[in-house]
Length: 87
Image: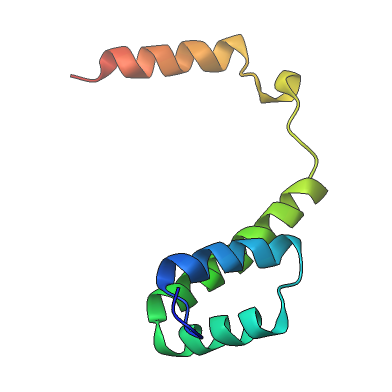
């Protein structure tokens, strides 16, 4: 790690850490400076934010019960027939 500038590897690590806890001021500033210059790290940050939002929504949605996810016997037979009919 350079004096005031982080490399991409450092930035990805700091961004991941920032999801759990606040970074020190000088680390936040160094990350921001890097993000202004590196589109790949900026993309990585956007992806982390998106994943965080999606994972929060996943907790809110009810899970699918296995009994509601099963197919009826009639439907299973239709699928089997359709698969056998394919060349």
